[in-house]
Image 1 (spheres, one colour):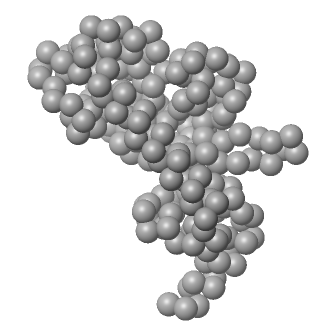
Image 2: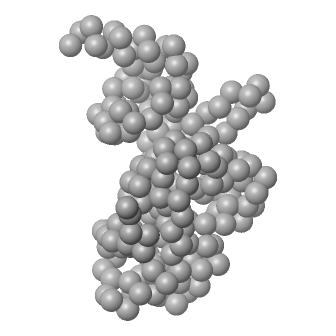
Image 3: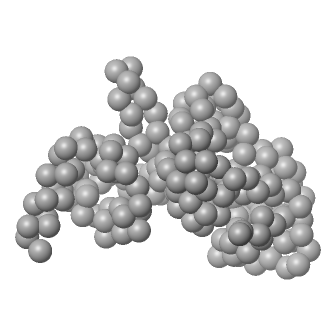
Length: 198
């Protein structure tokens, strides 16, 4: 059974960017809420403002949107020790355009928008942390755009597999195909082709 008030993971994540003393840790954990989420449950949905920063303590998630034809496009995956959100909705406090869905039974830790704002105003360490995370997220998004424009479907799959082997093993094939910009059938053909070479 998981200890719901264990903040080790989220604190260690923050400490990779900024040093924290005991007072900083208490200030942060005082506003963290731990939540259990069932597989296929949504923590963000279009039309509702995303009001939390969400850290994945255990489990897996994806964010995606539906186009006008009802086809879904996966934007992000998140497993243990990652943050996930509809970042445009969260940062600008406007209605979300993404779904954020649990791919497994999961445990998340959330901090409300107003609490994050107050924390950052009171403690510059946390403002620096959230700024660095936002910059890293922007850099990743740019790299993904370049990958989508410059690499073949097989190259995109191989690059993702090399960078995130644990995600490839855990997420459904339809979600991975959606993220890579191809059909599940085409991804299956790529995997079969690569398997026959090895």
